[in-house]
Amino acid sequence: MQKTILLLLPLFLICTSLYSQNEKIVVQGAIVIDNNDDPNPTAGTIRWTGLDFEGYDGTQWLSLTCCNLADTTVIVTDQDGNEYPTVNIGSQCWMGENLRVTTYNDGTPIPFAADPAGWLANNSGGNTIPTYSWILDDPTTAVTYGAVYNWFAIDTLTNGGKNICPVGWHVPTEMDIEILLQTVDPAATPSSSLIAGGILKSTGDLVTGDGLWESPNTGAIDSLGFTAVPSIRRNTGGTWFSGTPKYILNLWTSDSLTSTVGYGLTFRYDDAEANAGFFSGSYGLACRCLKD
Image (tube, rainbow, N blue to C red; front, side, top):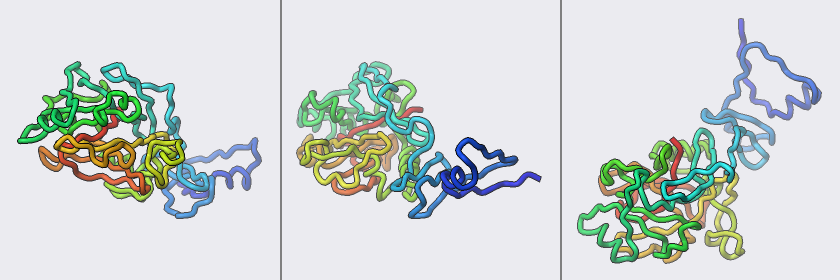
């Protein structure tokens, strides 16, 4: 009869307590590594979250699978020729920067709003015209912050079934966001985590001069290479919420509450949380693409 062994011991205990460095363990049957909800596990403990193998480094859980950190040698190129680093987090592969594309992946141009009046015209009076803008209407911000898009540029029912992401990639769904949050933080709810924002945000702040976020950039460690940088929300009337891209990052998903209210993920400068919720489809938010 085969037996199943439930392995919950730290890996280093197996190596140092049972065998010398050059010996090996041979197990007939199966070793089952289960999840671990101990709030203070020993450094070196390993677990299976249901999505990924993780190891505890004494401070946080980190993926043990290949390439969990951003690899700048693995590049995805959008339909405009812009290049983005990629990052693997659990079972998902994300763009490591905010999207800055100006066309759909079939080559169709996305309508552009160069100023507040242009944005207002496309997003008021019942208009649901797909639209993008450069942050603060300044094209030199594109590489650092990406562009902002209204939800109608994302929504395939509004944009004629087009994909804003490169071929083989897509705008994340609500479920994709749930998987991201619960991979980064197994204690997360489907729409909220107390720590995922800090783990995913870029480090540093504007006061110290080594980052893009406003101080204190609470909890930011960017340990998985997602490098969430601030953006800025464009309001329905074309104004810019908060006036400068340093306080918040809102990322669209492809899901919605209604035909004019989209779903998105939010990071803030003053806490370590990541929270998903609903936004007017006429707002301009940033976007990250996820590999199919």
